[in-house]
Image (cartoon, rainbow, N blue to C red):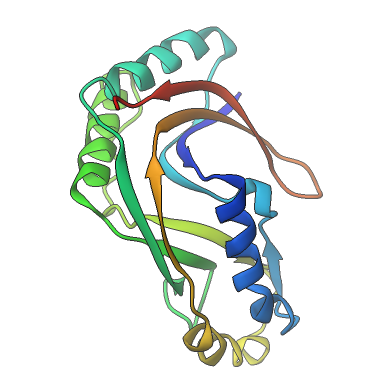
Length: 186
């Protein structure tokens, strides 16, 4: 099983993000766009995990949120990693509010004890909208930076739960299913 831990967004927010990014899709960039129902905030990627460890992974997520109350997550701004000149990922930003940073840190430390090393990169919360195709040419990407500058979207969502997700890879793109939901305190 290919697993990760994520915050899923309400359907109306996913649809609004999708609609806000329409000008990017209209540019016919060499991007594999994320389906609206698949937009999420990854907190910890676990990778391939033996099916007999699923309960252990669910318990780790559950124990990681025990001291976390619901919180507001601001979502705003468009960008690309590592940058708009040489992008690999197109994203919408999420503010690294303290409850989010603490939650992500607790998850990192908890999963480290289970054999999933702490990610050495800084946590940069974002919602992936698309990934560049490997064969993308720099000349095909010239329109990206100005288009990102023109986009606008801002909202806040109340984070009520954290999910253990399964990613199933296919030629048509990844599909995600929730394996376990851990509800935050109200």
